[in-house]
Amino acid sequence: MKKYRLPLIMLCVFEGLAIGLWLGTGNFFYLFNFTYIGGCIAFGLFLFIRKISFARRFIQLAVGLYMLVYLGIICRENMQIEGFWYYLFSGVFEAAVIHYAAAKIFGPLLFGRGWCGYACWTAMVLDMLPFKRRGGERRNIGFIRYIMFAFSLILVCALFLIKPLGLSDIMFYIFIAGNAAYYIAEIILAFAFKDNRAFCKYICPVTVFLKPMSYFSLIRIKCDEEKCTGCGKCRKVCPMDVEVNNNSRRRENATECILCQECVKACPVRALK
Ligand code: SF4
Ligand code: SF4
Ligand code: SF4
Image 1: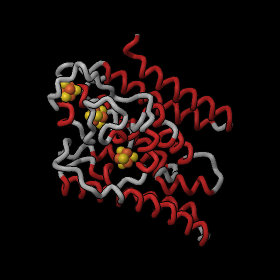
Image 2: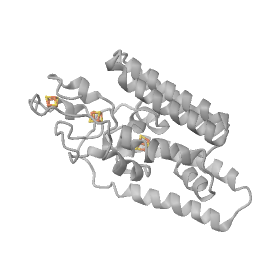
Image 3: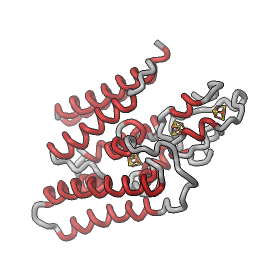
């Protein structure tokens, strides 16, 4: 059973959240929502351990499509960062606020950027593009994420000040337009930089939360530096340019790791786990 510890932990964490929020708010939706997400993650991790090749893809599609299509389009919840500000400023502890707290602000203390590797509906499309390994040197344009972050905050503040009629409808259209813009930008960037994850590295505003919190992540890829022969195969396959053969938390691009496990699979001496 030891090797199934991670899926069991994730199942327990999400089920605890599901039951806690259900009992705390009296809203049955939370029981369904977090049981579904936790169940998909746990089952996907189980498939991963069984070495099923589509395991990560399964979680990406099961969770990503659920959040984009069901929560976002059918239930009209803005699950993007603008939605987070919107519900936060409205004093409503639900929808995007809970999603951000669980997946992007406090969750990364436990599972780092697992959200980015396994559940993000933006990356669900990015990972279908042809440039799975980086095409060249990293660009010095990561500051764009802070501009995007500030823009999302200013946009929602402005809407609260203007108080237009039908603000919740406007937030829904912002969600649709924002996602369309993200998908267009990420595809253009991926082809321009020959790097599927260029959008994640330079543009995504959510990384302003994700990066500092994942620095402290309990779950991380560790390197047994005594076993490592320095062959560099792990770094060649890493989509996020992490210096994973250095065990320090301060390794290069340490807060970019999406826990995809490609490095672990590539290491010939099993120095990574
Ligand atoms: S960096 Fe942003 S776009 Fe990329 S996977 Fe993470 S949340 Fe999604
Ligand atoms: S290849 Fe390894 S170091 Fe790179 S993102 Fe995936 S798990 Fe992290
Ligand atoms: S693939 Fe393994 S042995 Fe090679 S550099 Fe990476 S950790 Fe070291």
